[in-house]
Image 1 (cartoon, helix red, strand yellow):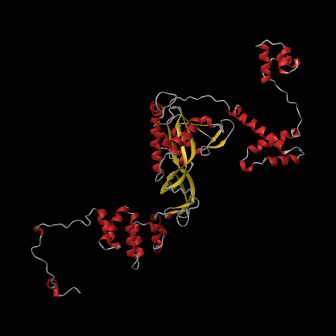
Image 2: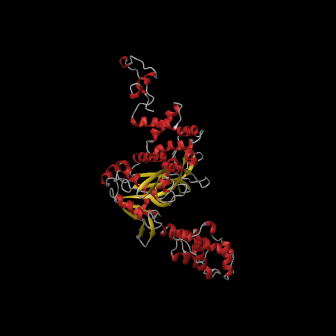
Length: 510
């Protein structure tokens, strides 16, 4: 390139002849004439076409490389294995030729992905109250001193860009429904459309184009809140790019700087407040003012918030002979009359409700254990077993459900089991909670223990006085002198003999 520039400069700037240029450069006059006539700025050299031993196998090798690129890194064949497979098909070339072909193929593929493969997009604009976007992400937080993996629900208004992040332990239906309720509650209303990816809790089957078989429970929630669900094309996250960006931004703005929390409820309270603080601190970017300012204007366009959707997931269970049902490796007690019978388990994010025959039987706090190294837990309610111990009072002594009795009941039980028949009397005392307020029974037991008379009869007496509103353990009364007796009664049996003489015959009836 430098010599060609010198030739053109001598001819065009210095007006030297072809002969003089050839003398100074040492080139032939024909070469100088050829370069000047071509008008080239830099010379080009044609690479001759040489046949390669790999040419008959190039299409086969390209297909293999494409297949291997779709596998995980540990499952891919190495280039040495591909070279050996080509030799089995008759290839006689070297490993270096195969490696050079693979390098060129990967470079062409990467270049294609960075240009036309990435696609072309159109910026989107949403009217106030038109739509919201929803997505999940996975992050960690310290709860109760332990690092816990969490599923973070992100919901964001498409116009004002107001957002809410809420933490859960699972990505199940009941968690999804709860996240929508809290999102609409914080936003102050419901938009007209919801944009999702094809998550399993919302879509049962993905059809051609926009055809979707929507989950029946998810559709029930959408109908309750009166919004239209819309689903992105598979592997097209840019169609809900706002909430995708929110997932990335929340890690830097919220999650990396959050403190430790005692439990999940405290974390969600902090997340809600932190999100609302960011509304006020973050400029909208497209419209004047902050996110909070634009949200204040958009709120009037949202549909008024209805009542919360009863977002439970229902499962059919059969109660064991020990009055227990199993769920998520744990067991929960059910009232004894429904032992060996089918019941319906309604699953909420934070509680479990057992129903049968159209009635609610009981409710338990839901226990979610993420570690499978911990043993399964059994959650008892001793009240569920009262019908059993009334028939089998001996089971009260070592019954596992009765290890969780209130301290006053446990203390009364220690006194009663020291005497014969004490287990039966203790069962009768515990059974009082089936007909009276439990706190009243507990108060009567505490009074009986304080007075040093831990008996069934005394507990019943105190309970009836509490229920009837009579004073128990009140201050001593100071009676007036007018009510004092003027003649003290005497224990004199002769008065009875005086009454006998009034009977005919003067004799007793016997």
